Amino acid sequence: MPEEIIRSLTVGGLRYGYRLLPRDPDAGGGTVTEPVLVIGGALQGMFGWPQMDDHLGPVADVVTADLPGMGTADPLPPGPSAPVLRAAVTGIIDDLGASRINLFGFSYGAAIAFGCAQHDPGRIARLVLGGVPTHIGADRRTHWRRATRALAEGDTEGFATLAADGLMCLDPERPVHRRELARRYVRRSFLHAVAHSAHAADSLRRALGDRPDFTGGLSGVPSLVFAGEHDTVTSPELQREFAGTIEGSRFLTLPESDHWVVLERSDEVAALVTRFFTDRPLGPSDARLPHQARAGEAVPVEQAPVPSPYPGRPAPR
Image 1 (tube, rainbow, N blue to C red):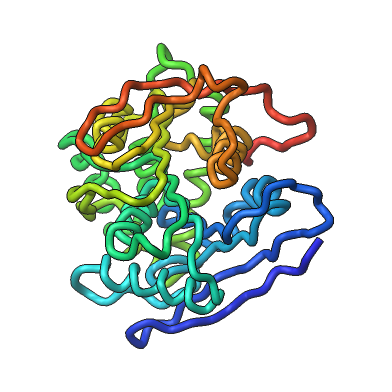
Image 2 (tube, rainbow, N blue to C red):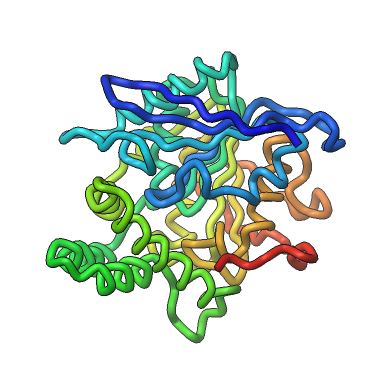
């Protein structure tokens, strides 16, 4: 298997970096596609996506990043962060020497990815957005303000519990695959972040409190939007409406999952992303393919068929 490469870059005087796992030419993956850049939430830096390595590694170079404000990168300065983060992504594309890339953005990272596609669509071959926080209700914001107050008061345990619970569906009447495993993992991730990064608290406040801009639509970039069927951060119906603003987009829900669908359905998400980036059908038959939307047209909810988890794959811990 090829050795990963870590590269350091700067944007506007801020230090950040990315990790490149070159495609494995001996893996026999069939169709080869452009490099894939994965941008996750505030706690999902360059080392948080092993399932993407497994699925995408045979067909593409896999790139993950610590953008400014994330992981080991420098903290973001005061003021709007979107222009800085877009410039950082462009810096990665240029450093790769690629004319175009495939771009996957999840949760907080979906706003960054969408903004990059809007501002420079010619550099984006295909776009996948998951857990898109287009509309966050007052109840969620109130909950997260309680979490950030706990952090400011030094109650890291209380903060981690509140922050994790605010991102998950805890309704026992709504089944979520691996719910408790994902909940423990997310909570520990919050605790680890605030204990090991000097600017983690600021990064988390931005991720929980920013109001990202998902307006303006998009055309010219083949796009897929997906959501967990029980996402309580932004409902699948609202994410579907957002997908309708992207010309020619597809929209899917994944069953028995919530906002943390990438943990609860990790292999299924990675397989779905790989199929889309290699222009393969998204389900076992073309009849399962979702509706193609025109710009401004709402996309009907389609539920992605979810196979049994691959044998031997560990659950998130």
